[in-house]
Image (tube, rainbow, N blue to C red):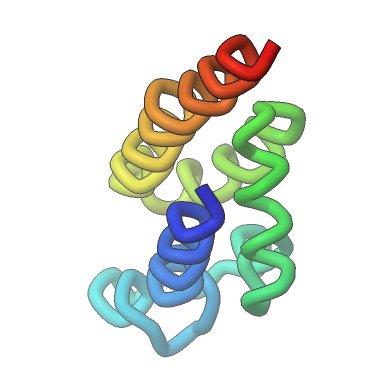
Length: 98
């Protein structure tokens, strides 16, 4: 599960963090609202880790979605993997133990 979050943290930094990286380079859009949750690796990792609980789902996804409609694909793949695969594995392990 940590590898999943680490992988998507790195992808999120590449896609959303800097003014000169992939999406901004391709679309020529510079935004500061997306950078609140994707500024550096630590902030991105923490935001995506908390996003697995959907506690801050609108706070993380909506600024990115407002500027880049294709960011839905990133968050969809991340959340489907987190919900379907890893949450079920944790619950199954818990019930197997007890």
